[in-house]
Image (cartoon, rainbow, N blue to C red; front, side, top):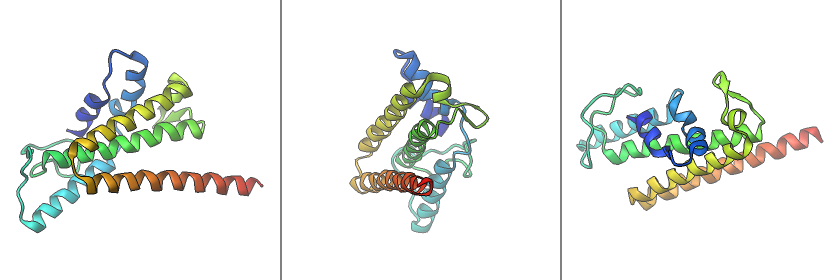
Length: 168
C-alpha cells in the first residue's frame, strides 16, 4: 500500500525531471521502517482500546511489512505515507549536503540529476507530505510532525557545528 501510494503522491509527469527525481526513492523502496512502525503502533493502539478502524479501514494484507494493513484506518495509512515522505525529503537534502553520489548501491538523486534538482525534489516531497498532513485535519498530529521536522533540522545543525569544531 505505502509504496504505491508514495509513487502516486510524488507523480508529476508534466515536469519529467522533477517527476523522475521525486519518484526515485518511491520506485526503489528501502526497508520502509517508518510505515511499518506507524502501522504496528496503530494496530497495537486499536487492539488496546478495542476500537475498530472507521475511516476507510483496510481489510487486506500488504507486502510492505508490519503484518499487513488489516484493521488499519485510512488516515493511519496516510500517516505512514507522510512519515516516509518526510524521511525521503530529508534523505534527498542529506545527500546534497554530504555530497553523496550513491545511496542503496545506486546513483543518488543528486548524482543522477544534480544538486539543484535533488533539493527541489526534496522540497517538493516535503510539500506533498505537508498537504497530506493538512488533509488529515488533526492539529495534534500536525504539531507533532512539525516538531519532528524541527528536531531533525536542529540535529543536523548541531552535527554540522560539531564537525566544524572538530576540524577547528
